[in-house]
Length: 278
Length: 268
Image (cartoon, rainbow over all chains, first blue to last red; front, side, top):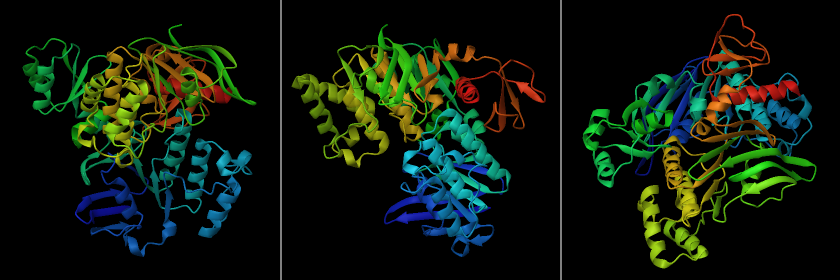
């Protein structure tokens, strides 16, 4: 399992990650979510042992990260880390030999038909499947995935997530960095990061259910818009109407001077995120 | 047809990039083209704005059409304001009007505090918002945006969508491509593409209602017509037959698009 406690990373005066703690148990899938610059990448690099924390620690299966045999870890970076001028079979064989294991069967993963195709000749969806196979060929107990299904269509995404769930069901601890609800809802828990800190942890549906967004059907005057912003609200243009985050319905009605056309609605994932992160 | 394409086919040599694809939109409407890598989204955007030659079918667009490519089209060595002024110059907009329009766009995009920052110094979200601001500067009737939200975090994505909605509210037709089905839920019209062919098209409601068969939720995988979603499995029953140990569930857009892709995959 992954156990990160009090992770802090400073770059000169900038605190990129600030006292971040999280765990990922065997068989668990945990999502790391945050705006660009929230500290996700820095946190992942520290979890992988590629960056030394200023303070705090990361342990894998009870061992400090510096003492961990890297073969327990699998990693799929956003850029996938495959060799474009090698074939699918050559990529898999190369990485398997580096880890000292036999290459996995391409047929079992449905990749047999493209075994002799070069990586830079196949679609992104297929490249992602190859990257997953490569990352799992040594049966790691920790799998770290950076935006694992970015750019893939709905069915391709569902099939990739089947693989991730299968890996977790086999006992691996899976840490996923993502921006999207489609991926976040696949995780057992998510850690929402803002300004380097964890601002909330839990199942994504439970987190989203805690927030409401006020929808306004009518047009707003400049004075009303200013009033809503002065009350601390984030004002967004809907299609149709307006969406107000961070102000309760009573206060919105006060600012508008009427309850007409004003309703509290469930927040979307992004709206809940904005409420937490801003 | 209002604006868009009608049964358009586009071929690059032997490769059919778009196969009889149609999408239509009008003033104030938002159309979303959704699909994965290689689905034909960029070709469709480029066809609508007249950058691709069609093999067959019809295209229609207003004379004032603007296109933001996937790369956002922002000049890295110009500041935010210089990017906007340069585009305004290209359109021959008069100085007084340009100044007030740029001022307005800096306000609604939230880019005012970054107005002197170079294009290369902007975050992904800021760059995309600047790209859309450059596209709407000339007040086009139709705005075509190719994957403007790819790589954006949730906050930037929401801000960008707010800006896109504002453009529709101002009376523009907006066509956007994306890889994420949840973004398509906001559209008046949706076209789901896969390998150049239409998987599903229409309003969100009509697409959801058009799903053949029935959909169930189960605790385990049940054959080729099931897929993992959230913390359970979805099981599609094409002929509507009951699925043992499963609960019938109302599909949403993501379910129906996945069903259409499975239907195609199984039928091949």
